[in-house]
Length: 433
Image (tube, rainbow, N blue to C red):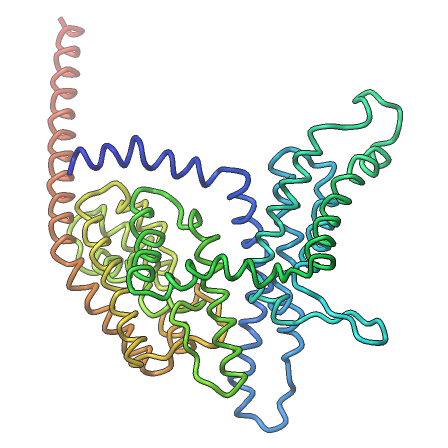
């Protein structure tokens, strides 16, 4: 275990953190985070719709969702190349890169034209259903713009205003980007949008398989987390899968059919009670049953955040990260949670998620009820009970260790104080003599 911990600490964790800081990966992560408000708005409309159905004459707030989460991919197509250029230190041309990203993405989604010359887009491709295409388009545009931004037609000491130099320096790369889109879509008649999704179909399918489903959430939400590596490292992959999943389920429900995709946005609410690693039970143990001062303080500090599924105070305060005693139970429940959820979803014991609800920071009974109703809530309570059984023996061992450490520390302080008192008495005696 010690050799494994040393390898993870000194080799694996630094490499993963280096990947997370890579400009291309970081740009996608930040783009998704930047777009979170529109996802929250879509969730708010979901809540209004849920309660509005009980009130006669309640207004239709659907258009608010359409022009927020319904345009998620369009927003990302701007944000990704914009942030790539920003992280590559090409701030002068980041806005132009964002504009080119939008134009290229709109080409890829395969617009059609009616007899009157009106351009027609499929709304589903502009929302969460087009997320993969938007990310790919953004990366391509960022790649082209980054190459051309390393060269300029003008010298740094040129007297020409900056906005003029930016115009000319971005003309060629934007033209190249649009030419590629024109050639592929309008001349070669290739359906790039469908080709991208066919390319990623194995990944999307793997996300619905037992191994893919369990490993995705275990690695991202638990394993990497216990080594201090942010779950955002794999979020670009996860978000592409779950956003496509919720879009497919919403389309199925709209067509009068049952949702079929297991791995959809919000499915993790069934088991991530207290955050990744199902840590709510551990936090409550520390709050109510700890005998050590350290665990009691951590329990008090992490109680409210844990109820809102925020467990950084617990993971890094207890700590769980790099602490083999608490890492092991987190790994165990981190595997059992998604595994049991996958089985329950396949057996239709809990419903497949078909309504967008992204208020993950609400206490788990609320989030779980919105995505899974009463059956989902009962399942989550079962996961909570299981997590209690898994964490409890390890918690007792760790708490006892902390008590021993505190007693040893107290004893050392007493001995130190006695030595200081003896030293002070000896010095006083010398002074008196």
